[in-house]
Amino acid sequence: MDVPAWLLPAPTVIVQEGVAGWVNYQHHLLSTIRLSLIGFAIGVTVGLVVAISLHLLPTVKQAFYPLLILSQNIPIIVLAPLLVIWFGFGVMPKLIVITLVCFFPIAVSTLDGFRQTSYELMHYMQMAGASKRQIFTKLELPHALPSFFSGLKIAATYSVMGAVISEWLGANQGIGVYMTLAQSSFRTDRVFVAIFFIMVLCMIFFGIIIALEKLLIKGRVKEEKV
Image 1 (tube, helix red, strand yellow):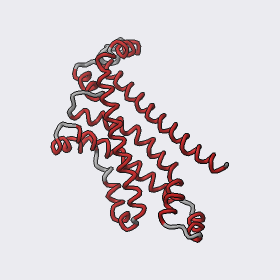
Image 2 (cartoon, helix red, strand yellow):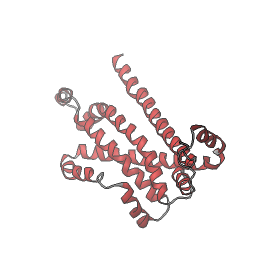
Image 3 (tube, one colour):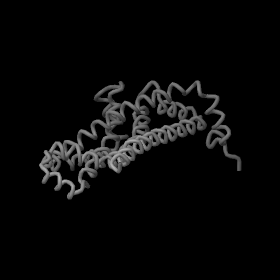
Image 4 (cartoon, one colour):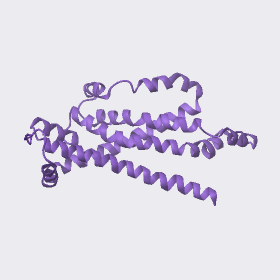
């Protein structure tokens, strides 16, 4: 049975469109990369600040940790239109969407890393007269790095998806805009091109985080052994 090209294009057609249409979507791709990086940086900063604050203030953690969980129960696709109403069609609602999807894995994974700090080492440092700041900077923070990078890997891929979702709501350029225009014109080949580049961006961001993890954590382990 012959399948219409607009319904399911052949892989060769998708590749041809990806090569021939580079001029048409390169600015969309660059816009999504820029938006993803800015939102990712903000999300990581917010997540790290939240994790450190909740860790250092146990009473605040008991009150706000459930709210942290509840913040992820609201579907972004439902919340995003409200952000557009409140903040307009500028870059602000888009960055809020990306921050919301990125900060949670950072905050939760880093908190878990703090909690898994060796009790014996902490007791030893306390017996040696170390201050709370020294215990945090010399023991708890380094031991939380692996968990922090685990959250970074998740947030890195979420940042791209968050950028695309935010672009669906109203933007002049971006892969999300390119995909919406392709869908409305029944250019399924362009939709697959957009999906391909979204996957590539996620893999690139993920690979960068893995490289940084190996550089920082493994390099630190080698120094400690020496």
